Length: 538
Image (cartoon, rainbow, N blue to C red; front, side, top):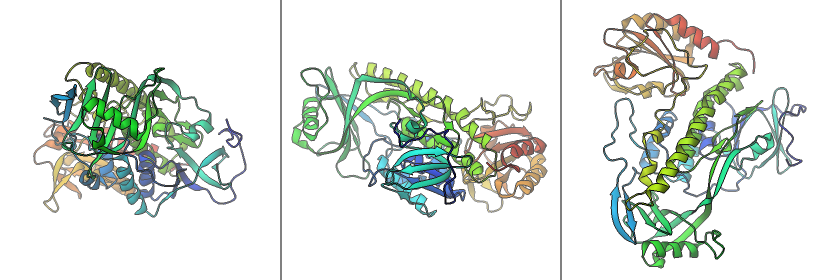
């Protein structure tokens, strides 16, 4: 551990100036998502990054369906959809000849409870730009060229030492600074797992002339592969992935424009000069690593700083975005003294098992894909399954997911506390216009759904007691803010049969917090008192 990085448990005096509530270290998708979520909750947040300029690397290929739901809640999904593209059919080649096409998204369509059937292709730098623009609307900007080199914790804050000799005081610090996370190293946390040195890939952004941009091209041969996926919003830009060249000793040759052209010509059988530009070159080795804790006092980790996975299935960036969405509402309440710091323990409780699951499923998908590409017609479509959508990840095991009262919802329903809260199309009874449940959920509040007229009194009581913290909606309840479930999609999604009633409390991260009987406002209030009632300062 470097001398400039005191261990996190070391006590020091408080910073001279008042600490900012939250400092986010790292401005990739994870850090930006967290900063946006905190800023919209009126939390004073700073976000720093050691880079001198914003990266232009394409890297991750885009948000999966669950991340699109997160981005909708943050108010930016329309721009992501506009600037990205739908998943593309994959064309597989052997010996330079096309032998099979596959379209993993064929036959997969939006449903009333899940509006995004598949992910969106968009370069990571474009997604980051959209998130930065959203963050700027709250008056927050990434502080570039600001490198954290040390941290120490006091009784009420963390002091972060910067490379230029300055320091920043914060009540809480979140390391969103990638797989090589300096924050994680300053904490002294082990990053257990393995690096598969034999599984190496070279990557970069290239320009290629004359290829059909409506396809993701994949050339597989006995001695290697080249994969080219068009980058949305560019004229000739492509993601380039390939097995590396190797020297006489079998070691991977470092990527270069020249080696990319040789690989391109070898596997595609096309002229090397069709690849006109290669930039942002990197070597990727399969890593399977994670921490055993997400929090050390007032310092937390999120995204690749806490877990790195094989790229199969595209779960890395998405898991980080969803880490941030889980943490945002909890950290906002704790950092502003509106909830006990114990609420932060539920972040690790909920997300650490998800990271372990993600590592397992991405490793399994990588194994399956490597086996598939050895067979003619096999390709990267093997990596994509229902598991990679992110829609089935919930927190039923969490202390924030009580079982609720027996018979609160249809016994045949699979929905439980902790699950992702489904969407459904409804009608606003006041205006007659269409409204989706996701539109009701959007924002920093809890949402209380009351199904049936027996819930009207409970809806009024809870909203009166908790003000802006809870927004109450009746579903065919005759409540002041009422939605008509004309097609029955909401009742179906939430397992509430016709003629029955139930209360469903949805957390700010759009997971079900509690399911209770129609007259169970007491259970709802008990749950909320634990999380948002009067609490001591953090």
